[in-house]
Length: 251
Length: 296
Image (tube, rainbow over all chains, first blue to last red; front, top):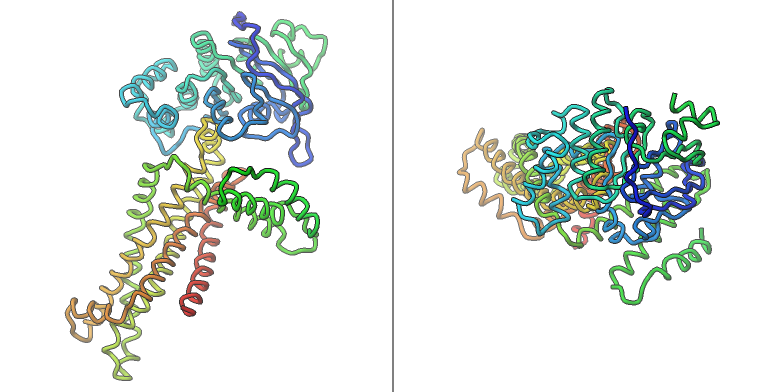
C-alpha cells in the first residue's frame, strides 16, 4: 500500500488556536492548536475518548468550545451569528460515523434535500443531473430509489459521502469514515476519499484510528493524547518516532 | 436568587437589545433570559424537591418560545407541513372515528333509561350534542391523538437525534427546528380541530343509531334537535380548546423527541413520556378553558 503523495499547498484554510472543551468536569480538549492547509488530507489519530470527534464538532458549531478560536477561511466560527455560521457550514461537508442518512427519504431525496434548501434557483433537471453525477463519483449510480435501510454499510457510507459532496464543499470533515467496515470496503472508502480530494481539491480533516486508512490518505498526521496534541508529522516521520506510545499506533 | 437575578438580567439582557429591533424581539429576548436564569440555570438548594423537573419546565418554556419565534420566520416549510397534516389527519382518522362512534353510542344507551324515568327522552339529542361538542369530543380526540401523534413525533425526532440525523441537518445549514418542530406543531394545531369536527359528527350519528334501537326518529330530525340546543358559546370555545390541545400534543412530542440524549433506550422513554405529559397537559388546558368559559 502506497502513502499519499502530498498535494497540499501552504495556504491555510482552518486554524485552531487554544481549543478547550470540558464535559461534566472531564476536560476532553486541552489547548489544541492545529492548521489545515488547502487540498490537504490531515488525519487526527488517537485512542477512543481522546477528543478527536469533539474537534470537528466544534468546527461546525455542533459543540460550543469553552475556550479558543476556530478560524475557517479567516472567519472565527466561535464568534459569528447563526446566519453567518450557516453560510460557512455550506462550505463544509461532514461525514458522520453512522452516516446519518435521513431514513424516511430515498437516496435521491437525501441528496436533493440540501439542494432544495440552498440552491432554490436550481431546476429539477439540473438537480437530477447533479445527483446523477455525484452518485457516479461514489460508484453507486443506480441507487436513487433505494431507502437507506436497504443499503449495506459500505453503500451507506458512499451515499453519506455523496450527500456531503452535493453542495461542493471546500472542506471535508470525516468522523471515523472506515469504522465498522470490513477491510476491503474500508480500503475502497479510503481510495474514494483520496480520489475525491484529487478531483475536487478538497481540504480534509479525517478523524480515525484506522492505520491502513491513515497510511493511504494522510498528507500529515497529528496524534491526540488525552485532549492534547502530542505529535505531528508525516506517516514516515511518526512511524520512526522515538516515543514508544506514538510508534504503537503504527505497529 | 433576588438581587443576583436582577443584576444578571441587567448585565446580560439589556446590552444585547439593540435600539432598532422590534418590541416583539425585546419581549422575546427578555422572556428567554428570564426563564433561563430563573429556572434552567438557577442554583436551587439541594433540599428543593423536583429540582430536575423545575429545570425541565424551564427548558420546555424556552423550547416553546423558540417555536413561537421560528414559526413566524421565513422560509416556511410548506411541503413538510402538508405532509405532516396528511400523516396526522389521515392516519389518525380511522381510530378517532371508531372511538367517537362507540362514545356516542354508549353515551346514548346509558343516559336514555334515566331520561325515560323522568319522561324527558326528548331532551336526549340535545344532551348528547352538548356533552359531545363541549367536552367529550375534543378531550377524547385529543387523548387519542396524544397516544398516536405525540408518541410518533417523540419517537421519530428522538431516533433522528440519536442517529445524528438532526445534527446532519444542522451541519448542512438547514434549520432542523424549523423543518422538524415548527411543521409538526403547526400540523397538529391545524389538524386536531378537523379531527374533532369529524368525531363530533360521527358521535351524534351513532347516538341517533342508539336512539333508534328503542325509539324512532329520522336522521334529519335528530340532528335538528341536537343542534338546536347548541349556540356559538358552545362551539367556539370547543374549537379554541381543540386548537390548544393540538399545539400541546405537537409541542410536547417535539420537545421530548428533540431533547433526547443517549442511546436508543432514550427514544422509547421519550415516546412514553410524550404521551403521559401531553395527556396531563390536555387535562390541564381543559380545566383552565372550562373555568374561563364558565366565567364568560
